[in-house]
Amino acid sequence: MSHLPEFLRPLILSGPSGVGKSTLLQRLFAEFPDKFGFSVSHTTRAPRPGEQDGKQYHFVTREKFLALRQEGAFIESAEFSGNFYGTSFQTVREVQDKGRRCILDIEAQGVRQIKATDLNPIYCFISPPSLTSLRERLRARGTETEASIQKRLATALNEIQYAKEPHVHNFVIVNDDLDRAYQLFKQIALGEAVSGDKLPPLDD
Ligand SMILES: Nc1ncnc2c1ncn2[C@@H]1O[C@H](COP(=O)(O)OP(=O)(O)OP(=O)(O)O)[C@@H](O)[C@H]1O
Image (tube, rainbow, N blue to C red; front, side, top):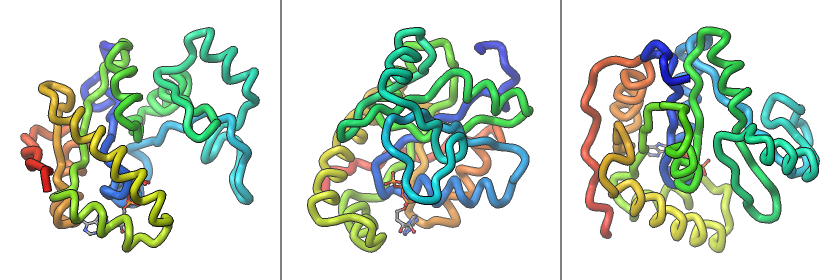
């Protein structure tokens, strides 16, 4: 997988919950419906109403998941609230076989695991302008309880700590103004030569 044309190298998007990853991705997929593909993860959690196998997730049993993991099928995997989640090499290949660039939304632990593989992606970190703005966005989204917001903020600190280590990410995008952040994200996704933003101090 390491000799792909630059545009087909997978693009790993990471950043704290609520920073705007889904918002940026939705815009990109809407503007370029044929250029990009999102990797469909495997999970052992039960499908929610309306979810289809192979679309939002590949839904598998615990036994099947563990067997796949044993075989080395996953680029990265993790357990959250009692369920396993993983990204398989196969799903990334399926996107690439269609001539599309595969975009993966991965949390910090997964990024560490991917660094140990030969996937050879581009790493892009989406940063909030400040921790205060991240807290406000999570509240304004209205999808989380206060306890869940606190949990996400604690995890956000880990994401940010990791992003501060040298050479973890190829690009940083500060999602301050959404239109500005999207323009930069689009250029990076299209493989254009840009330098990206600087990581803010994020110590507020
Ligand atoms: N630049 C911005 N300025 C203000 N609000 C924004 C900006 N970008 C995104 N938002 C809003 O912030 C909230 C969180 O965004 P989004 O759901 O895309 O985050 P996420 O990183 O995908 O989170 P998760 O990892 O939890 O899915 C949404 O309500 C979104 O509309």
